[in-house]
Structures are given as C-alpha cells and as structure tokens.
Length: 158
Image 1 (cartoon, one colour):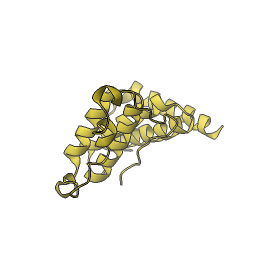
Image 2: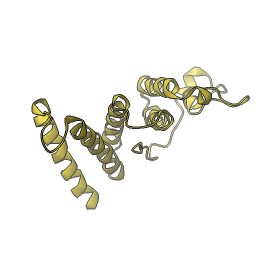
Image 3: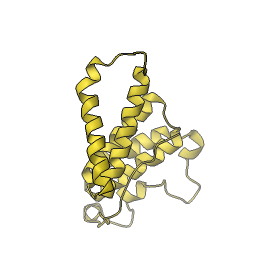
C-alpha cells in the first residue's frame, strides 16, 4: 500500500514537471538546475517504487532516464554510473533486448576509469559474459534462461 501511495505522488510530481518544464526559469525559490536535479531524483524513486511493485518495464525505463540525466549533470562518479549501467543491461538481457543491453554495456565501458577498463589477466570483463558465453553456440545464447524475477535497480550517485 505504501509503494502504491508513493507511486501516485511521484507520478503527480512527474506530471507537474512535464506540464511546466518549458516554462521553468530561474526564480527566487529554486534554480533551474535544482529543479532538474529534483526531477532526476523523482525518476530514481519511481524506478525503486516500480521495482517494488513488480513493474519491471517501468522500473527499467526510469532507471535509464535516471542514468541519462545524471551523466550531463555530473551527479555521480564514473565508476558507480558504469556499474549501474551494467546492472540495467542485465534487465535488458533478461528481456532479450540485446540492442539496449549492448548500448548500456558500451556506455559503461566508455565511462569506466582507465585502470578499471582492463580486467585482471585470466578474467572476463564484468557483465559481458552475460551477452556472449564462449561455451555456447551463438544461436543458443538467445535461448539462455535468465531469472526475470530478479530485481534490477540503480542507486543515486552521490
């Protein structure tokens, strides 16, 4: 019940933002930057609520929006952002949306700090094995069963 109430409040906040974003301007109360940061948090909280309610597709959409908005705003460190992006790719793999999964993984690899880009000798890059398992023929990879009941989410970067 609490999650449903939170969802209604957050969706109301999202609707207000959407209706008024074109007329937003810096005013005496909050700067435009603060309003945008609050909307990013709204998306993050919506992702969490959708996840708790079992609404995985909506949770993933809000997670992707959160990540997309955090990047230009400089709201998180590169490694944490990349890790969150890799977690989101797992959702897309579980739902056979390999194009989006690859996009998330490519973005994560691009954002990883230089020292984190190279895996230790003998180790695979994290999460890439979820897309390509060398022991399986290519046509079998699409048939891999991944537990869709696993909840994937992002954390707000500080």
